[in-house]
Length: 360
Image 1 (cartoon, rainbow, N blue to C red):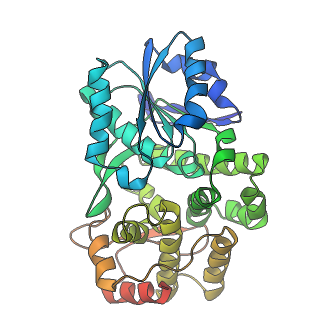
Image 2 (cartoon, helix red, strand yellow):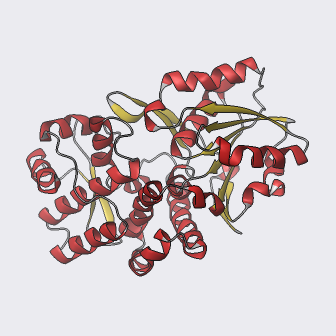
Image 3 (cartoon, rainbow, N blue to C red):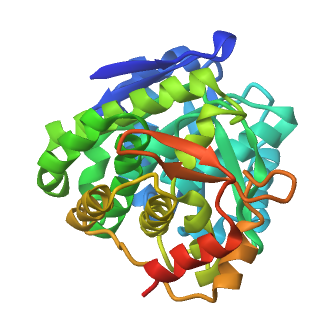
């Protein structure tokens, strides 16, 4: 097991990364000051891991109230969130009752948002079971639900007390979900860690084959990168915005195509290629660098072409992006592999040309 720390003064917390951590009650116990916890999970994860977690908690003398939600991005809504509140109120949960999110990014986001809101804040623990959640969404305190007009538009910054990334849970992950998680892994190499990007070029096949050492290294390196960024810019007023490479385009794809049609990582991959193409057209990247980025996404089995949507539809959805300032689109672009910037220099016509060049 390896442990990282997200350094946020009194809200600092550990990220434990390793195998069979669901059985490690000693890691959970320091964060459980109550004899009852709520475990928010979904219909896919519950049959796989809920009982194991409940048994671990039972050995600590703690009972677990499971809240099992429908699985899928399309359920990341107010209606589903209210199911969590109904369960919390029905069980007379207190402000001190911990909430554990056991699942992927959707469960982590909704569980965290519920924890932020219920009685104005209850203890929150992340146990991510997908690669995407382990390397990205479980770390940093972003919680949210979707709106028909935009992804993750309603939410709160609310840090967990603990992140427990059990690599063993990735063995049950469908291949498509594993590949989607790799999009966020590649992102770290692109925006700030060229050595990691080179490592990914050499080791992608090991990751796809679910080599445990390779996966553990990729999760650790990704979390180390994110922990540094979050510690420096918790509320995304500066450097943290770079973590959104490909996301402005990707969120437009997810919203425009219907939540769940494209997985988040798939949309981010296609969105990153649009951002890469725009960077080239602005003179920031070379043709060879664009090809190198494209080849790594292809090697991960991820889409490198965006879905055909009217360019004005893309722009309309992108105008809801959280990086828009004074009505101007601010995009994360690359000025080399391993170096990114946030820029509003691209005109809408230049953005449209890049979108069209990358659409199927």
